[in-house]
Length: 403
Image 1: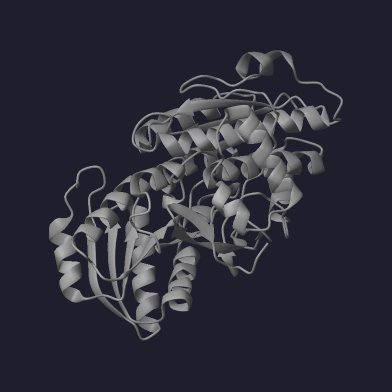
Image 2: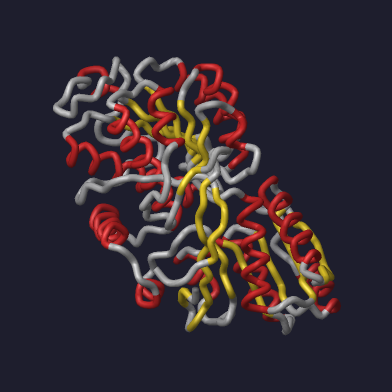
């Protein structure tokens, strides 16, 4: 892998893939869910299941964030199926739609903890849903993996709680460092979505930038899903004459913001977050914003990136298996789902049991984990994980890795 900016991060996920298995639809259960769990407990692995061989994942399979939930689900499903095939195990996974709503996630959490066959829950997307459910799982003594929970407080919400993505605070510091390296220290304008994640990350970027001696000339928020015309804010940004324009938003909002900024002839270096590293984003912007930097703590597997990066055999095998199973290119969220399940199952295999304290001990001891959603990953004593970030740049409407 090419040189990367190494930083502290939280959590990673691991999965395996079984070529030819199809994606379960929204609200559906994947192959080998609750019915199989009732009948299949013994296998050739020698693992002591004690009646528990089920993982339960909840995430947005409908609603504004369904594209993230679906990719995570696909990666998780592939991981579990491949792991079972390789090791002769009898794990099953059940998926539920929380619609991206914290209240719905809590309702699902209560159902999950009442299922005696579940030993591990996986929050499929977002810190808010993962954190809302953490007390329920902690009280039940159940393992909780935050597949896309980057809030800095999440790891401390229970003894058996582990995040997968990079800690949002450390990620934000890494993003500021990358902007300093690739753009130089100057005047920075920040436009961010008014969510917990947007507020938390951009506050850190702002403070870190000012610690470098840079100036934040605009610091504005917007309501995602409601704001479509950004002209007033963008005019304010243009009048401030920033050197760098950083947008923290989901890919659809970020695309509209950058395109509208182009229409106003905003002369600044555009920079966006990892939420933009999707084919959907490139389809929206085309080559209109070539030169834009995209910073991400998760990888990208689009053809243009594969040509500009050096991936190991495990990652290449993951990409091939995912494409065969789902007839699409995986993204960083699919990779996180893949890694999350594999970390759990490999830890169970090492412990020889699905007993939660024993599995937790194995996860906590992970050092330099070879995943597909990052590199050199390892948990620290606070259940955060060391990891680097990726720097991509738009060229001819595609992402190219530059670090």
